[in-house]
Amino acid sequence: MPKLSQQTLEKRFQCPHCSVTLRTRQGLSGHIQFIHPKGTTNTESKSLIDSRTQEVLLQRLASESRGITEANFREMAEIRADWHFIKASMASENIKLNDTDYKTYLFVAAALMYGNERLMNKLKKELSSAFEQLMEIVSKMGSKS
Image (cartoon, rainbow, N blue to C red; front, top):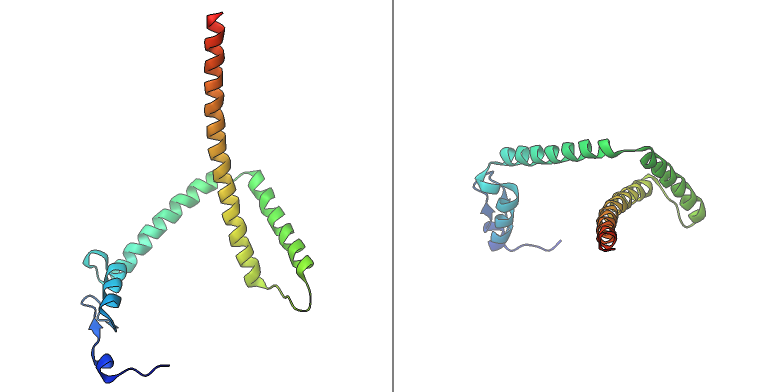
């Protein structure tokens, strides 16, 4: 670890909100902007962040739980089966897969699953819109003849 000069050690910047000491002005500025938005104290900002995060997570969970279908459960079972296949196919002396690898795989699989679901919803909307336009054209053609 590099040795710090005495001047660097003496020149510290203290946060006016929570008394944390930082080495640079930029560090103090970033600390205040991130930890103390709008002049809150440390405990107030944490509770603010926690309540916002909790609110967003509850809303997302509620909306997703309404949308969970049997197909989602089948997809989750297939993801687990795929993991066992991947683990078996990669098994060797040099490669060992553990719980952390499985958790990472689940995070990636969930992200892909939600991404695919969003894409399917977008495509369904576009397809229904195109179908409505097609029906409009057909009805106009029928009225001309």
